[in-house]
Length: 222
Image (cartoon, rainbow, N blue to C red; front, side, top):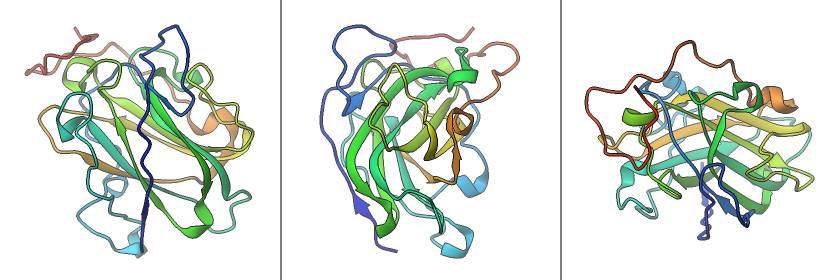
C-alpha cells in the first residue's frame, strides 16, 4: 500500500509550559523502559496487510537531539466503515508515569496536520521527542502515543483528548531510547468513545531508572 508522507516543520511547545501555543506543532517530557506495546503494534519487519502491519517512511529529520533514536514514526489509518475520514490529524505523546492517566497522561509533545483525508489510505508521520527538552525512556520511563481526527479543531496541548465521535487510538508502553533506532508504530483509529480512547490507569509505583542513563535534559526516574 502506498503511503503519503506529511511533514510539518514548526515550533513545538515544552511540556506543560506557558506562553503562546502553536497548534500546528507542540512539545514536552518522556517515560518507561517497556518496549512498544504488543508485537503487532511494531512495524518494519513485515508489510503483510493481513496482519495489519505497515512500514513507515524513512526518517526525514534527526530532530532537536540530532539522532534518529528520538524520532517516533507511525502509520495512521481508519478502519473500514469509519464514521469520519477527514479532518485535522492531531497526534502526540504523553508521559505514562507522571500521573494523569485518566486524562491521557502528562503531555509531552504533539503535532497537527490540517485537512487530512484518511479515506485515501494510511499516512506516515513522525514526531520528535526532543522538542522542548530530551526525556529518554531510560531516565523517564514510557510514553502514551495517541492520535485522532480533530473534527471540531479544538485540540491543543492543554486539551489533547478526542471528543466523542472523533476516530482515535493510542498505544501505551512506548519507549524512546537513546540506544535504539527510530521506531515505527501502527495506529488504527478504531475508537470513537472520546477520552476513553486515550485514557489509561496510572501504573503502580514510580518510574525506576534504567541501568544506563541517556543524559536526558529532565530526569523523573528514581
